Length: 480
Image (cartoon, rainbow, N blue to C red; front, side, top):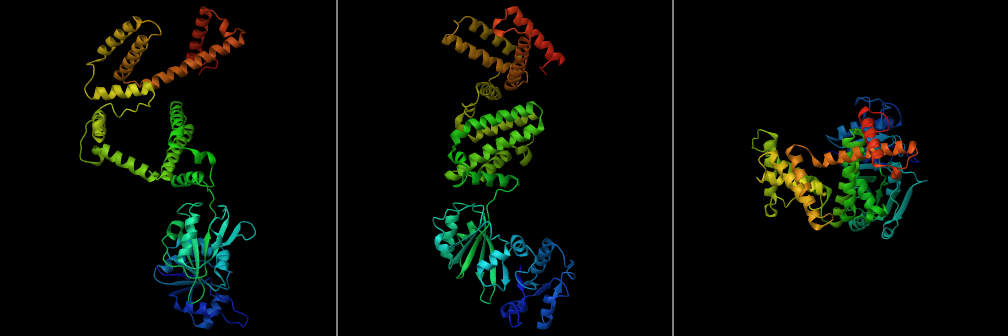
């Protein structure tokens, strides 16, 4: 790709255009002017330099900056191109910054007096509100505000540029945009768009260069990478104190809480709430990944790569050459592959001890059954339930034996659920919700009738309970 130059041909006090700008025009393969009339076209004609107009390139003189940039990039694909205006900075608004943002090479600007001037004018910097200009020697120890335009002047070599970039990495993301303005031997200035990460390996920087660092503002939502960037900002030196203090251990309860809230949204069949709750779950994932990145242990890319690899490995019937006939066969293969990933831990070793007990019981039950430790039919499970009930009845209330037998009974009931194709966790959660709704209905009725709950007789409790069940079935009252 060729170079792109933005050139102003405003005559000097003696009525002559800048000689260095003219030399650059003669070297360009394509010279573009806004129109066939006006000062730029007339100046080029007097110099004997051929030019093409925007109209000849399919645009009007008042074409948008975006369209002009597209034309310049298209011309640069086959050689050097120059866009001519009556004088700098009388160049189409936003043109230089737009070319920098879209182009893959550099942008040269003629004629300007200093790199500071070209940066301020070319990048539409507001000098009255949010611009900070510092010499490169003053960068170390500088208390930066990431929401301002920053220009670093007096950069004389690559070593100084690298040192400044290294300090700035404490305030900005590695991919944060930097524009380097450097003088050209033939006059004018060259603008190069790079990043703080790339500054660390920059080879040469001409004497008297300047660096422009754009404001770091949190933009509107822009996809997964924007979420990752925001979390990095929150964990950064000038971010949120709470986020900076978090560890994997401190976030563990939040991970569990957000997962349960997502499940509640699923059970409520509320897609808007589910989208919101899943966002909270994703926040926990990205925040933990950022902590890993800060510790140097892993990054969000490692998290994504790990799950992609795992999914491919555990779906050989999709990404490999394994054939399956049913969902049950897929499950058996899945469990076998998981056991093969960590063979030393055994069939039940991968079930986390931190799981809620009911969830853990289901996992243990399913894995043991998949390995062959299973009743022949559900009748055997029911017989075991009755056996455990009898053993529990034979213990003394509150004794260690009673606790052990109750655990045995609950574990056996979990196997009943498994045999009947029921998720025990979901079933118990729904019963909790049902009981809560009925009890709240009893509280409502009792309050309306002026009868304190703690003063009710057993028969009155039973009556309120039956009424609450009736309201639940008919949809009357407050229970839905």
